[in-house]
Length: 434
Image 1 (tube, rainbow, N blue to C red):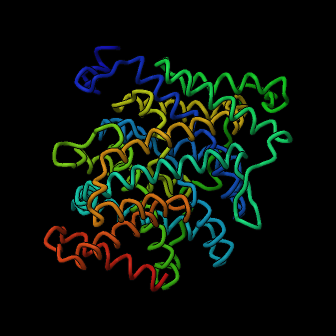
Image 2 (image 1 turned 120 degrees about the horizontal axis):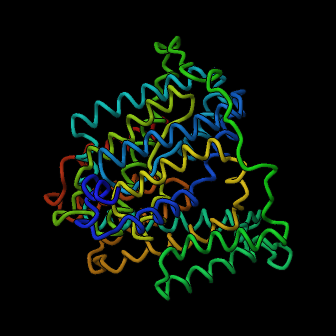
């Protein structure tokens, strides 16, 4: 088996081992397993049944992540995207009063468009046209975004009507205190270079939470997954000639396109997966996994499938190949049967992992050119806009637009790739009409 893994995933060439890849995959899965329950919870607001949605989430995630493992040999995991599922449920179905079957048709068409753009190398061109400074800013911005999500998930940072955000009353919030303790544990383990430190931290917090009443024990361990038939292959294309249908398709397309590009660039840049020219090898294969996964997700009955930023947690644990992704995919398949057991891991256990990974990804700022404002400022704008707008795509938009404007206004337009101009036009049209 080890020799098969070596031949398939080129472990030695990538400086990794079977053990490291398996631990990395388990770590990634633990940090993103919340999607198994959160995605059905959001989409069920449309009237779709929760049980079949859970199965669709697991199968869609497993299928797309398997594609990433075998097509691209990258340690990235995919699942129905957060934000995109909320747009599906609350904006399209509830807000625009479109049937969920029509929304699934829009997701299906979006994925089909992605397949065409990937085959024609357009998406790969966008990934590889990003200047180094923006790649650094995007990577660090995703790090700050992940940190922000972790702080919220741990309930350390909460809503404050006076100033938008504030610190929770710690003495009255045991889960927040447990998260902080878990964060210190993970940092100590990482500082001591203990392999799998983040995963160990998640397990320890989950166990400590049992006597505190934070970790809820399951009623069982194994349960048979319900049938997919109520949502399987239910796309409704009857409104395809309506303008509002294409507005929905374009919104899904736009957000997913740049969320995926941002995640691939950010995580790859953090661990030096880019080549000497700053390009991501096998970018087309990675993007094709995302595109085909979205089409398959729509057929299964779930919203847009995209590359997850939580993949960074496994990468930080040493994951470098598709074996990490394969591990995640297998765990998603098993999750359909072991959902009661997986559900016991509390948010306060995975939140510190997100905070730590965010810190790792912000380390790339050391390579930024602080002496050139046309390089430094766009990176900073991308960095801040991602968490403050709660959108990776928005951070990329502001970063690229400011980069192009500054280069032009300082007489350095020759440094720009033609594709950057095209992207700016698309962003401006998006702001103007959506």
